[in-house]
Length: 90
Length: 383
Image (cartoon, rainbow over all chains, first blue to last red; front, side):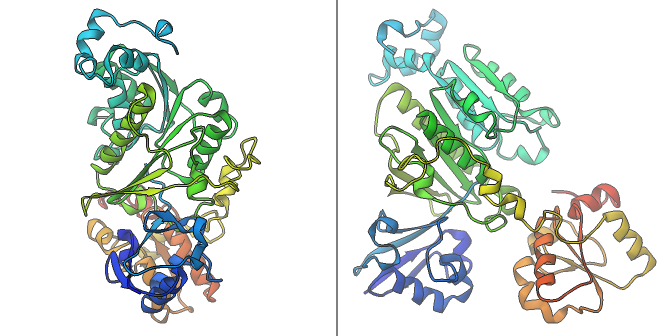
C-alpha cells in the first residue's frame, strides 16, 4: 500500500522533505516504517511506548485518527497522512 | 439582537461603510450587527494587530484588547498595530491610538493585564466573541476553557515560522481546542516565535482569516470554520482544511468536568522546565572576568549557525543544541564548561542534559548573549 506522509517544515528537516512515500496496513505501520528510516524523526511522532502524543495530531486524509482507531486505523493505497503538531506562536 | 434593537448608523458611518452596505449579504442589517458586536482580542501582537485593525475598520462597535507587554523593536517586522515611534510604549496605548485613527467610531476597552485564571472569566464574560491571538500554550488552554465555560466562540489562530492554523472553537455544537490537542507539548519542545522565528507576513495571513471568521459569525453569513482546521503553508502557497470532531470525552466541551479554571502554568508544565533554576548559573560579568583571567573554560554556544552569524562572543565555540548529544566526545568533563544561547533557555536544557550524562563542572550563562551585550560588551548586537 502506498501512503504519502506530509510533515510540517520543522519536522521535514529531520527527514528527506515534507512529503514521504511509505506504506503498510495501518497508520502504525507507516509510523514504524518512517521511524526506522528517519531515527531523528521517530521521537517526534510517537512516545517511548509507541503511542501518539496528545499534542501531535495525525490526519488520515482529512480525518483525525483518534476517532478512527488511532495508530490501528487501516490505510488504503493512495491515502494521505498529515501530521499537525501543536504550535502556539501569535 | 432583533433588528429593532440594533444601533442605527450616522451619516458618517453610512459613507464609511458604503462598500459593506452594497454587499447584499451584509447590507444595513449586517453593518448594524457589527456596530452592536463586542469582540475581545487577546494579545496585541502579530495576530492581534491585523485582527484589531480590520475589525476596527469593518465597524465592530466595541473592541477589547488584552496585553501587558511593551513594544520592542523586534515586534515591528510583523506587529503592524505599532510603529517605530512606539518602541518602549505599552502595546495597548499604541494600539488604542492606531485604532482611533483607523475608525474613531470604535469603542476600545483596554485590559492591561496578563490573562490568568483569576481574571479570565470576568474579562471574557463582557464580550460576544473572543479572538485567540496569544503566543503561549498556557494562555491558549486558559482562553479555550474560559470560552467553553462561558459559551463564547473563540476564533483560534496560531503561527510558527512559515505555517499557521485557524479554526473556530467553543460554539454550541462545535469542538474546542482540547478536542484537537488534548494536552500541550512539554515546555521547550516547540520553540516560540522568539526562539524559532516567524515570517512577518504570516500573522497577516492568519490574523485576517481570524478577522474574517469573526465578521462572518457576527453578521451570520457563510460557512464558519467550526469543526474545521485550516492549515496555511506560506512557502508551499497551500491552504488545506481538515476536520476537527467534537470529542465526547473532552473534559471541557464533552464531559464538562472542567467547570472552573485551573492552574494553566502547571497544566503546561511551565514551572518544571530546566530553565527554572535547576542548573548552576554564571553571570555575564563573572564569565567575562574568568575569560579575562585566562581560566580554562570551554564556552559552548548552543544557538544555531544563523544566529552565530548575527553575533557571537570571541573565544566561544558553536555547538548547536541539537548536536550536543552527538558531540559529547568533544567535551572534557574535567574542564569547566559554560553553555550559552540567546537568553538562557536552550543552554539551560543543554546543561541539564550534560548533567544527566555525568558532567559536574557545568554552568549556564544567565541571560545568554543578550545579557553579555547588556552587561559586558554592547558591541555585540542583540536580535
